[in-house]
Every structure is written in C-alpha cells, then in structure tokens.
Image 1 (cartoon, rainbow, N blue to C red):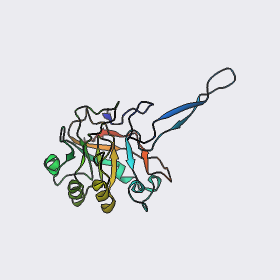
Image 2 (cartoon, one colour):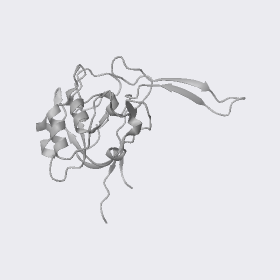
Image 3 (cartoon, rainbow, N blue to C red):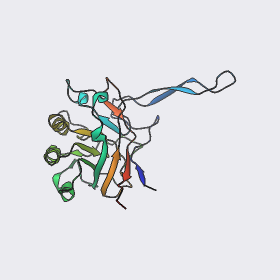
Image 4 (tube, one colour):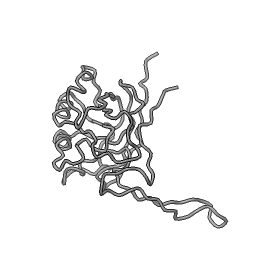
Length: 213
C-alpha cells in the first residue's frame, strides 16, 4: 500500500488565524430529528484558514482569483527540506544542499520541530526573497512552508510574496510537516474553485513516490 502523509492542520473553532482575520465558525441550519432527516451546517472562515493556497489576488490588485488558477502546480513531484530552527527567514544556506539537477518543481520547507496547530506564532519563519528568486531560476513553480506566511508576520512590504508575483509562482502555507522525512514525494493540494477568492483552503497530502517494479 502506498503511504500517505496528511500535511493539513485541523480546522475548527480554535484554529489559529492571522491577527484580524476571520476565525472559523459553524452554525447548524438543520439537525437530525423526528422532522428532519439530515444535519446541515453553515460555516464561516477566512480562505487562509488551515493549509491553504494563496492566489495572486492576495498580493496583486490585478491578480487572478484562486478559482482561475491552473491546478498543475498543486499536483506532482515535490521535495521536502528541513530548516528546523532557522530563525526569522529560510535562507539559501538552509536549502542549498537539496537543490540539485533532479530538483522537482515544488519545494516544501519545514521550519518547526512541532508546528503550533493550536496557537498563533508571531515569530513565524518566512522565506528570504532571494531564496524564492533562486528557486524560480532553477525551475521551481511552487514553494510551501509550515508557517502561516512566506513573509514575516510583521512585514508590510511582503518581499517574498512580491517575488512570487513577479515570477508567477504558487504558494502553500500552514502545512504540517512534523512527521515528514526529507526527500521526494508526490504532492496533492488542490484549491477549491472559488472564483472571487484571494486564497483557498486545501487538504494537503504527500504520497510516497511510486517506483518501477
């Protein structure tokens, strides 16, 4: 059996969100009972809740909404690299060893020993913008991270996001990579077809690569 790693944090009323963003809420519109055959709920959440894909509209006034994006970057071979305890930024020295001729077009970086799924971390690690630039030069289409943003939480200029915009890359944030060894995998993290949204939650999964018999 092919092994799967679920790299999505749980989404519920206590799930942490960026300060000022909408918390997850759920209300029951109908409940099972003598006069009702089903449970039906209404949920309210930010599209940046849990594991999510940023759309260009998030950081570009003229950018595409998430529902208009090509799905290919979110499905296929990827590499997981550990930069645990890297500090404020993932720098080139943290990932350089994993960049070789066989580098897949998707790179996910683990910065936490244990990803804080139950609290907001204001000291989250982001990508140094030159790392995103150099990865794009080497054919990477998508970068991911186990924090809530590829830029530091206090940043007002979002330099890593601006490299993503300029180089037309894609982003996954809030991944849980705690139990994933370094190496190559198949990534499956498809965003919803939300035609006006700046992001979309994803159920992000890694699958071990199949080897020829």
